[in-house]
Image (cartoon, rainbow, N blue to C red; front, side, top):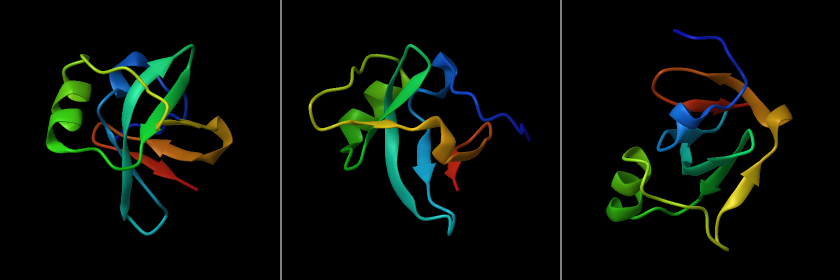
Length: 79
C-alpha cells in the first residue's frame, strides 16, 4: 500500500472515499497536479476516466491537496 498524498496522472479514474470509507466520487481528470472529482459518475463516466478518455467539466470539482489523507493503488481517501 502506498502512503503518498500527491496526485499523479495515474490516479485518474480512482474512487474518492471519505474518512468513513463511503464513496463520494471519482477522479475525472488530473490537471497540473490537481484532481478533479465527478461527484455523481455514471458507468460510462467511470470507465472513460479509468481509460484516460475523460476530461473535467463544469460539474466536476477540484480536490484541495490538503483534504487528501492517503492515495493507495485503489482509492484516494480524504481526511
